[in-house]
Image (cartoon, rainbow, N blue to C red; front, side, top):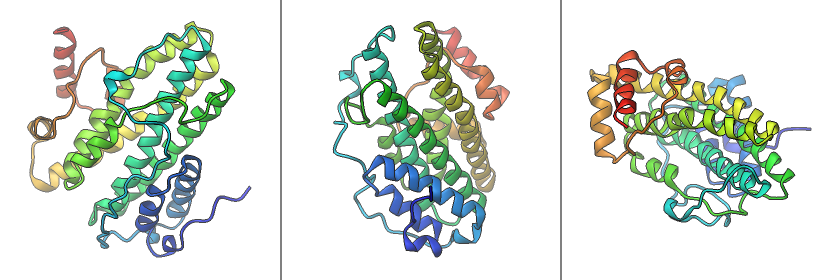
Length: 279
């Protein structure tokens, strides 16, 4: 089966193609096109033009009419002992991965004048998030549901909007704050799925956690790169940006092993341990 054709502009600039795919409203098509763009760009990095500055079309991100987006507080948690409860969970995870595709593509097109490896890293992230979305929606289908069947919230994209003019803030607050929370959340969710006997869904969580460690590591890499380029100390810079952009407060329990693998340094882990102890 051949990969879907990419927009013609991908022959000139993969960043233009990333913007086109970000505007794609069909989730299945978006996921397939994101994976195809990574294949094309990784095979020929000359497709990436870091010099071009692209205009925001004002209709981002492309997404389907469903699911309806609601306030997070209105989303009720359901137990995992029932098929219905696990379907709601799988849908919530699929929504996170759909947003993660958008976030990675947004970093590619939005921020010019970065090294080629920056764009390759985020195109790879977009492709892996697309793979996660496909795994989750395939499993969701086995419960008789499709993406869009349950309400969801827009917290991840809201942070993308807040940081749209500052690549340093984007690296600080999306991968190494919001996505890093997934490192903490995955093991207890996986455990509950396994306890409910849903080993197929638990196995998908294993794939996601493995890949997300790499994604947060990429965020840490580019956050520190930008701090070094601007002569900034990463630790107070992170605290300043978290306050400035109203990042969510970090709460334990924390997955210290995964966070260490994802590039958080020992000073950051000690600070998290202090938050965990204060609970």
